[in-house]
Length: 129
Image (cartoon, rainbow, N blue to C red; front, side):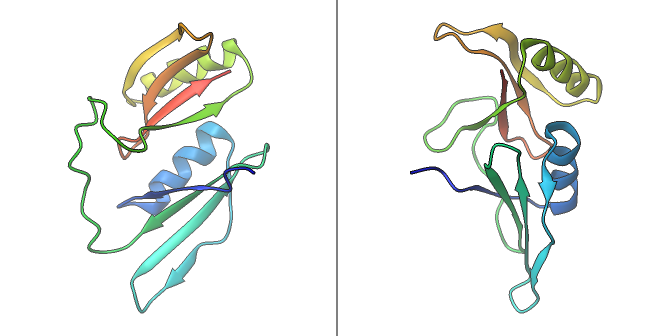
């Protein structure tokens, strides 16, 4: 058993695709478009086999959750960047570019070394070793 992919609705497919490709070395598949529904999607693949599906369609409402608070449901995606040094450097780079860093980098009580950042849509990303 494995998680095949996680899907994210976005109002700006290209912006979110570029963020994950640039900062997390994702590779984008061809964009799929269903013109009848106004639906577009793109799968992003990572070296270890995990994938994200980014989806866009008119009429999808913005989340009503407060991005600064925890809430019930899917709350973050953890992306391993391979080393503590890479967590530090990527977190600093994201902060310089104006992305919000909510926490860290730090060692957690359960032994992870991580930071928590927001992607351009406000989704929580744990950047971890």
